[in-house]
Image (cartoon, helix red, strand yellow):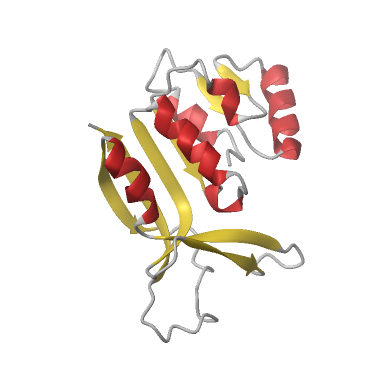
Length: 171
């Protein structure tokens, strides 16, 4: 979910020895890879799979509004858990309070494009990370996209739905 290189540009102002890995859909990967090559940007590598990071020590990983679109999210979360990054940011994720771990929704707010995405129980990520030596630094509503609402969901069981950000730090 890298989409742009603005995070890299910002962080490279503060970290001289940054090594930045970018992963997005194949179309964005191709565009960014060409841009990085043409502009001769250093310490920035476009990857095609998170598993390319298997032998890398990761300090910080950012799932920027992307995890809910990945069918293989369980294996990716297990990979991250085993890699033990210092910090994990899961941003732009839809969480709910309910009895199930997750469910799939049809996303129609980007018409004519239709996506299918997972909604996750708000306790799901804690069950993975807090139980594996991480502390939750914050859990808050993501305010970047004011268009996201859940007015079409029948909330007859007092379920909680929120477009959220969660930040974890390894103990």
